[in-house]
Image (cartoon, rainbow, N blue to C red; front, side, top):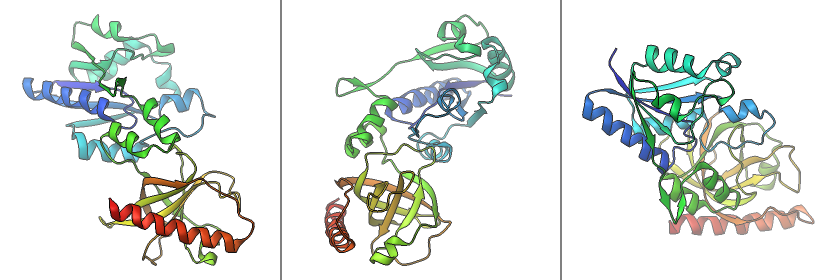
Length: 295
């Protein structure tokens, strides 16, 4: 097997900081004639150690795989199952079985705070001490005087600061999920919506958004308006994204959609009656069309 340069991390969001590290790994692989391998984990370790945590992922597995394919294109994209057995593996066993035996490591690149192995016993120094490969500590990049991090990006989304978040990601964030059957409220109101659960994906600030929509099997980005949240008039148990696609009337049930929030229009509201709700929805759609046309 060919020697490899291995970049290890969760890479949630595959943001500009991640991309910088991954491109450095690619450069080293090309320089030495090695394969470039991106190594990550599923499920995200935080989901295992904190099973009741609210959805937080910027890029669940399917999205992350798409991002690696379009943005990075590693020679190998390895996703390790973060199982109970894997958690109890020692740091040295991880190095021997994964990095050396499975991936034939020549250079390993990790962040300064990287920990691995049972009870996080392994760290950067553990890797540096191994003579079988070279270990490189990835430098963090700053934008606007702050480190680019998934935590910082999540904070922007929680404040509906879409442009700021996307600027740190280096790509336009989207929610990807399958359209499910709802209670048909939107259709009754004259605004049929594609209803989607968030699953593991971060739920941004609740509200009404101007959005772009891509439908499975179609490269076109349609315009629309979406409610992200619990719909105070009808109160869904869990936050959902419900999208009305402009000038579109085909059946979308069981289709996978990508929803790109572009700009928040307003907060969710509870109205006195359905006529007031319908009137506001018409205004929201008009505003959304103008926002999207201006972009």
